[in-house]
Length: 522
Image 1 (cartoon, rainbow, N blue to C red):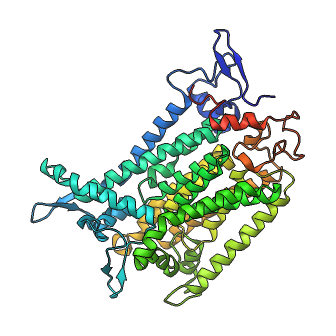
Image 2 (cartoon, rainbow, N blue to C red):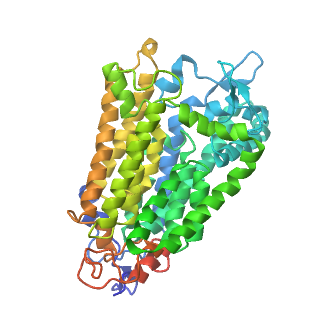
Image 3 (cartoon, rainbow, N blue to C red):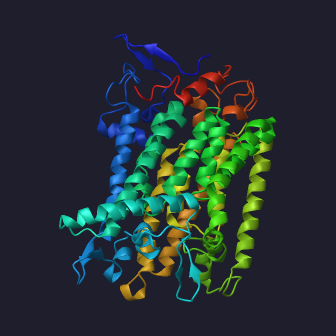
């Protein structure tokens, strides 16, 4: 049967009958549409819109939340005039904490030599302890920072000539935000394709509270865009393109490499090693092409990212830090490199990945790509010694693809959004009447509990203990699997029938993801 079903309405227009309507499928959406007047009726014609298509609506929603993300940082890019009349960023009175507007982008411009035109890795400075320091960002992120700084050095004087009280760092931030916003719109666009017949699940990405809080906290959107693009390329049976995007993503943040773990499971389960090896090899080559020139030319600067990662203590939003603050325990390590903490977090992650792999390979129903990848990335954050608040952006598209159940997903997102102002309030310190450590620790634990709940629900879904809405919407076929499920395997428990008992057309589902049979545009 053709997965993408359509009929003609009384007016002769073709209706997309396969598209899932949230008001019929999601209790949260049902309650909201009831407030507005009720869900779509049986005589409506989804898929026939000319102007307000799902794609256009979702992009508009994404732009609104990106604007909220910029406004949430606005108080941190205001300036004050110095004795020379030049405006500089005003963070007096712990404004960046008390306004919860902190962003790494603003201090980066002035603290790493970018404002003076210095190139990353070639430029260094002396730290307070006398050590030589370099930029701590991976290569592609540093390249974007440098190019944006060069543009800023040309644009900022023009802005200053207008007499507007806009510091150069604010210009740098705004230019960076524009680039990051573009990449997030690409994420939304890709999600429209990846969600297939559940296109409105993309609303959870476009309207995520995390975007209103963390879109411009750091450069994580770049890695998210690369990872989502890789998922889309793999779904369209383009392992080389997927590998290139994974390699580029790893040159921004290392975590997109974790996607390979999900595809490895399916390669082992179905003996589909050729696309996996192609993807992995391409990712490695891409990463080397980006990194080798810097690695060989500026070895000390290139290693700074690794040095900072190894020497970094437990982040405040991790369970390790909460336990230390709550119990007075000083941790396993006492000064210097946290060798024991690094070992413990690393071993926990390896053990967790092993359990995920064994479970996924032996599961009765073929696990979906998004389910496996979400589990890997989620446990990485849960057991890692560093969980910066903006890192939770990594999970947004993955959980929407793995478990599109709006209530629990939105509850988790709201907990992440709440954690940010509490963390900022806590970081303000006692002198600024900062939040007590107990309050911050409680919110951290609630957030962690919700992520664990999502993990449990995904595992339960993989075991067949609950209905998988994605498989139901796509006749039992994983729309993201691409080359990693042999022809005839629908992803169902038996591997030969769909959730409705009829044979699934995997090619039709693939066509929906690739845009050949979809109607998100109309």
